[in-house]
Amino acid sequence: MALGVGLLGYVGVPYLLVQWANLGLIREGRRARLEVALTFDDGPDPGTTPAVLDALRAAEMHATFFVLAARAEAYPELIRRMQEEGHHVEAHAAKHVHAWWRSPWGAYRDPGEAAHRIGAVTGQAVTLHRPPHGAYTLATILGQRATGLTGAQWSIEGGDWQTQATPDAVRTNLLKRLVPGAVVVLHDAGPGARVTVALLPALLRDLRARGYTSVPLTRLDGAEPVSSAALKRRIFIALDRVFDRLGNIRPAGGLADNLFRVAVTPFPLHDVTLQDGLTVTKGVPGVEFHVNNPVLVDLGPRASVRRAQQDFRALARDLDRVPAFRDAQVVYCLSALAPLLGLLGFETHDLPPATERRLRQWANILRFAYGNPPDARPPKLSVLSRDAFLKRYG
Image 1 (tube, one colour):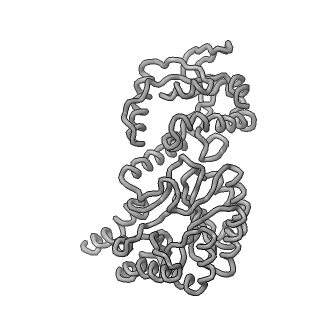
Image 2: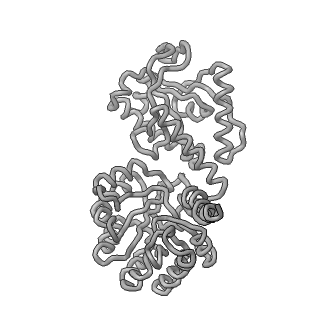
Image 3: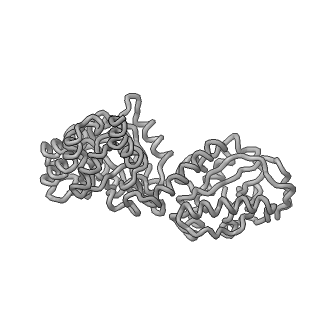
């Protein structure tokens, strides 16, 4: 019994609150700017790190390298190059072993030892620490705090280290999941380097083509340790994902950073006559869109309207190319955002009172989740016929 309680306190609670929920760790930034933080673990390695640095320099992007103390000491010229080219060097470990398999004393000492040894090479104070495998015990947490280090996790794992990983597959997966403010973990040394070195030049070109840049983690907009408010936001983002899976809802254009999530659904209201003369009857196929809530919140209303004009074009391409969308007669949304959608050309129609009450309650819950007062406007139907939508955004 005592052993079980001890393990729960030493491993279980840190796993849930820190390793999984990331409380107190830097995990991601805000979603208002088209920027991410590329991070690389396990280096430096003279056989692979120079190629990673070459690709970053050619793309004029910057990253954070979480390095191993012994490797930093062995290859100080690579550390110097990282610094000279505008990258940040932070601590990964003195001994690259999963925290669960280390003695409490070893896990406690490792963050401070790594930071001290790496700082001696860089000539600068180390402020961030990412333990091997992102794994935590109570000793790891105490070791970070004793030396004034902030834990740094990630929001998107590249998976370059997996045996079956290929450069094209990892790159495609990253681009689909990419969102502003993401912290991406890849490897410039070890098993993952064979994939990362091969994919990185193309990935950086793709980022640039989509308007993104990469910045060091400490310069990422809104990259702060996860608080209870940030955890509440993450819970609701996770609920959105569950809702999307259940409703077969996908990001417009197939990219997670699109402002809209869409699905083919039966039109839920009785006859609605649109300005172009189309009468929409209940049950006809339509494309219903939902807002990507964290992007909307971080952008704010004005920037969201500008962004929507671009992202609706991706939805227009879906209407032409995605077989499931070809029979849709309307594009519509049931939400409290009717004033904003009106600026984008959508017609506004009233909802039945019971539907309005239900949607308004949910809108207020979402506003609470994202730190806004629960005073949502009455929800409305915002709608365009397929032809009108394609004429405006196709």
